[in-house]
Picture 1 (cartoon, rainbow, N blue to C red):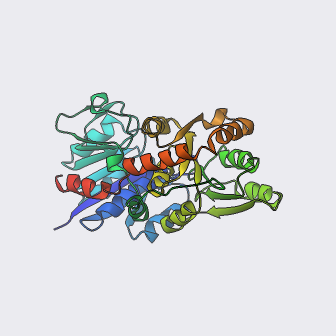
Picture 2 (cartoon, rainbow, N blue to C red):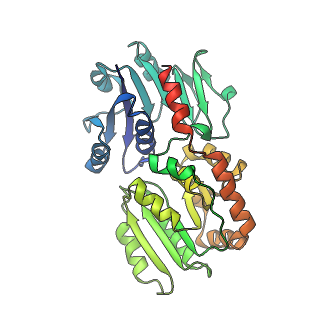
Picture 3 (cartoon, rainbow, N blue to C red):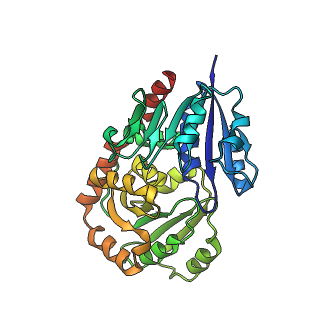
Length: 342
């Protein structure tokens, strides 16, 4: 008899889509062996349609409720065997309340701060170690890109041989689900100034509020540069767009792992604190070139950094080979084995 797993997570215009996308990725890995449902706090019905289109059941918390408030979540845990938490803060009080219900607990984490009551902890950064966690002695830690949470299309892409590039002319730009500061526009303007680039693919997230501004800028770009603007791509479409490009500019979030799966020269940085550890891991493993804090970058600085390496094809191809080593497409099997032990 299949066990029942409830994912408790959040997605919004402020927080973005990262928590939900990686929870959906994990759910896809487990769907054949477990019954999956979601408990979610969100400010848009588009998020609910995303879960529904993935054929998972869900309960939406009332708009006045917080996903971090256990008494609001508790009524939806009847009949559940395993709870997966993916939101912040992951307080020890919330975790303890779950364990007091005799449920198994999994935490998807980025910060490794505070005490963890979890049975399983997943942190896909290659920079964090078990010594940095304060947790139950019986907790099992799934650390590093060996346990990367990717949708099936990217798992398939990760299993392919690394591409070898002879030049860089096509660039992929994505800043995540919401991109409230509109970093997309800054990177787009910088990419337009780079002489060797003649094709730019700009992907906006489901809840990005800046599409009209970006579209207007694109209208006025010289015709010698082809710019394609997309929003709310599914995994298959995202894979297809990435495969058309040789270079990617993105934050050290879930999308950076998708880039690694396909294999592109990558410039990455961070726009939120929970991306810093993953960024360090990407840089240490030679998977990305570090742009640092996006908010501190000017268009001129971005263009300067890209121009400094865009013709260094040995460097670009080395990044791609390193990405394929870090993301090998075997994480679903590793993760399913761990969940079977719960």
